[in-house]
Image (cartoon, rainbow, N blue to C red; front, side):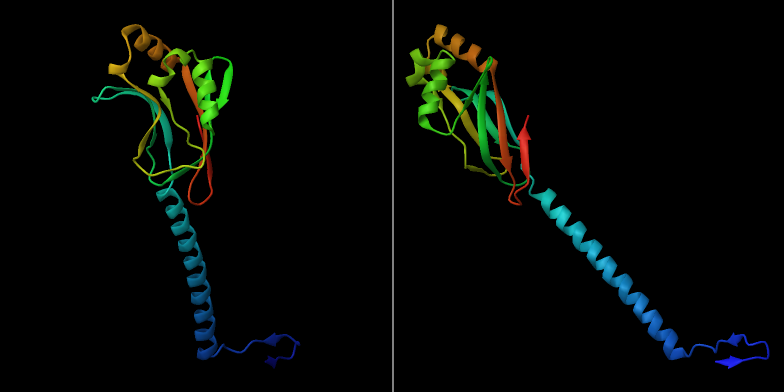
Length: 174
């Protein structure tokens, strides 16, 4: 650097190699930031592309089956972690066969329990688009009075479901 009579220093011009070095550093940093952002967006997209959406619904199928099913309407598999059936003020968790019988008794289906099947889900993986029965019976096995009683029970059932995706993200229904 050169000094003039007043003591103020004057900068020399930057060389072309210094300018090229600074430009290369700026471009490299911009490239690094852009790559990190693209990676974040890709990961976010991947998580959304495998997000499950488990929803129960009441069905009456052409083969005579009547009941409720659990359907995965999402894009990825759902792993059921907790499954509760609500009937009136009571809640029944369905992890075992014994609790299925308790539920049938509690909702008033014990007299036709051999004609009604309740399924368990805890720990089960439900693939995208898969439809699995929650509670079902065949219409031909039930008398008109039994079918009416069964339909009344179905109308009053609701469900609490906790499940997760492959990425361990937790979801709840409702």
